[in-house]
Length: 73
Image 1 (cartoon, rainbow, N blue to C red):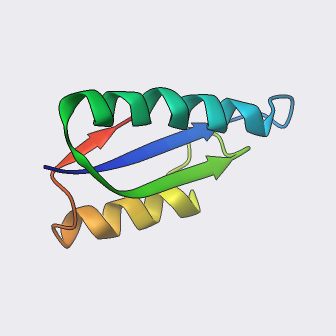
Image 2 (image 1 turned 180 degrees about the vertical axis):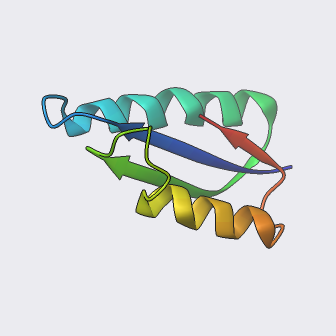
């Protein structure tokens, strides 16, 4: 199963470590399930209320193209 990870934080008050922590936790899940990680998308200091996040837009494009089977967030 081809998996991707999406991680983000919304406030400049948060740290990049938030993304790193999310990716670490999601990567552990991918490994436990025996999935193959094909991509990691991230958005730093972008509000979730906006869809105009670069990582999110790339994720949507790849989803439309059938580039992965499961999203872990």
